[in-house]
Length: 93
Image (cartoon, rainbow, N blue to C red; front, top):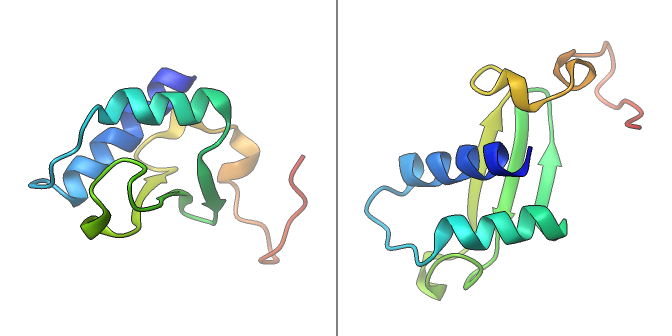
């Protein structure tokens, strides 16, 4: 769900960068999610989203990240992604 994912990312960014000034944060992230242009990586804890300078904040903020954990947002993820395999690498379909 694009809206739920966007909300989770926005909440995480505000938790991690509370005093930072974001402009149209929710709109920008929703657009990235819907257009599938958001950069991310998956690990055993959840998904980390990456934002380059100027994507959502001033250049001085640098690269920002938001990690959405399986434990905090279990309904956002399919069960197979929440299971920790015996090996670090696993095939994603």
